[in-house]
Structures are given as C-alpha cells and as structure tokens.
Length: 116
Image (cartoon, rainbow, N blue to C red; front, top):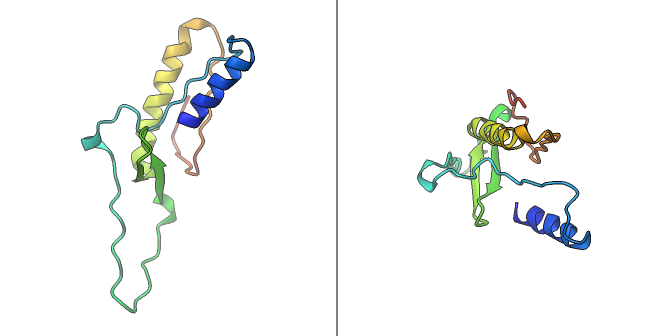
C-alpha cells in the first residue's frame, strides 16, 4: 500500500498538485487489531522420509503484509469478509460525491462472493 500511496503523491506533484483522480489504497487487514488477525499457522512438517501432505487448492494460504511491512499468512476464506468490508467502506465514502467509484483488487486469490 505504501508504494501506491507514494506513486499517487508523486503523480500529483508532477501535475502541479492537482490530482486527476482520488486514490484510496485499502488493505483487507487495515483496521484489524493485532489480536484479531486471521493468521494461518505454518503447515505441520511431515515425519522424516515422508512427502509433504497435498495442498487443498480451494483454500490456499495467501501471504500479505501489514501496514508496517510485517508479512503474515492468512487463508483466502478469512480475507473475503474483510475485503468486502473494505469495498463497502470505499463505496460509502464516495457514494455521495456523484463520481464513479472504481475498485481494483490486486491479489492472486479468487475471493468468490465479493460484490460491489
């Protein structure tokens, strides 16, 4: 999120300070207190000499970063309601301005069920 914010600020500075668009960068884990993070524990290691267990591709763990840069691993299913909360907040913040509201999700997950 921080690199996107810096890029938007640099673009506004190049255009004389007037941004052509308003950019809001939101993360699924923004506003979630540390004790409530939906973290995924590392998978158990197989006994020596045995292959690892197969991964369930329907709910693969995703690696993301907190605002402070700390990497965390969470399951897609745990992120979906948090992403929906961010989408809803973004739409509500722009709803009364009469401007188009565009949301771009940058992630490898599918997040079935998200609505805008």
